Amino acid sequence: MKWKTEEAQQAITITDNTSLWHRRLGHVNYKTLYEMKQKGVVEGIEGTLEKNGQVCESCIAGKQTRLPHKQQRPKTKRVLELIHSDDIGELKYFLGLKITQKIKNKLKREFDMQDIGELKYFLGLKITQKRECGILEISQRKYIIDVLQKFGMPDCKPSSTTIEPALNTTIENEDKGLETIHGQLIGCLLYTTIC
Image 1 (cartoon, rainbow, N blue to C red):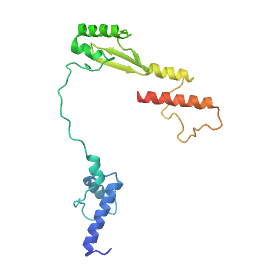
Image 2 (cartoon, rainbow, N blue to C red):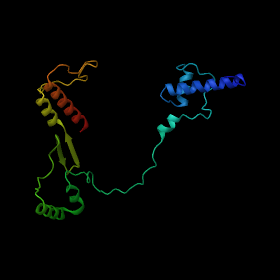
Image 3 (cartoon, one colour):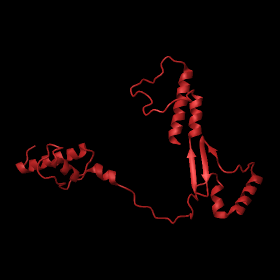
Image 4 (cartoon, rainbow, N blue to C red):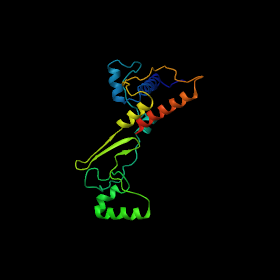
């Protein structure tokens, strides 16, 4: 391509190199790019660095956010007031204990149910509630110990790298039972990381 002047070609080259380094360095801002040029970290950029009206579409897309939501007034007055252990728990704070007890009694007459008190265990999680302090503790310790015992590893030690990075974990010509156990173990570990 022929340029009208040598200065025009140089300006395009500078702009292209600036854009190239901007993209190579993970869409770094132009001020940082200029500082890197001054320190000799980046090469091939000549002259002064100016944005020259350039627009990086990726940067614009990455900075887009939604409009802020309308601010709502808090519905609670105490810490952890809306966190509850069952469907009725939240009502205790809004309606009072007497009305809550009436609702429970009416539900008991209608459905086969019983009040078992505060939640202590749920899906392998141990839940400790200290209402007077406003503390809710959730622990997976018991679930993890049960998983280790189930797979014959109660005395195993923790390790930062549990397996060789390039280890082949495929099971070829092995017992299908081992494959099932392997799948169960992976499922238990995934559940532990998600909860």
